[in-house]
Image (cartoon, rainbow, N blue to C red):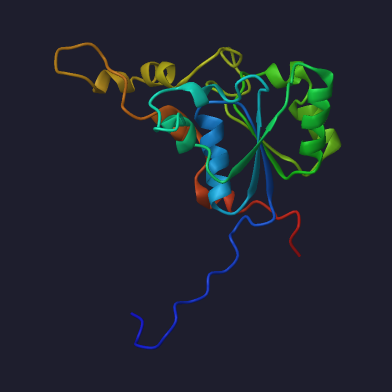
Length: 199
């Protein structure tokens, strides 16, 4: 407890100050993961589509100014840049950003970024220090690795929806995107990332 006339301890630097994170993709799993890193002081650059940006910008409900609750809930502490990854010049931009960054977070289906150009192997050639975080429904290997998955699918697949809803009724989606939120790393593990600009 502080005594009279004492000052609170000075806040030190944020744990991830000096770390640059590139985020690619939409909705919740990847954006929430990158948001946690931003909360810990990382510089987060979000790559969005030129036409409309992250799809969740248009998901209800909305604040009075027209901004999506869902989008804002997972995208604080970020800067956005519009990049078309279906065009060679857009891929070149993504590769330049990754070359000057410490972490890349993406939640495309397995193989999509490799097909577009800024995939793991090519980016690690440019930047061997890059921590490449890929979030997918069934992991990078195995018989279902390339199958699409989203939060509601994974809630059902894991059996979580069978635990919700009214007694005797049909399974019901949980109120939160629990699968997406659980896919993001915990802040303590993020603290071990090295600082590119530190001593």
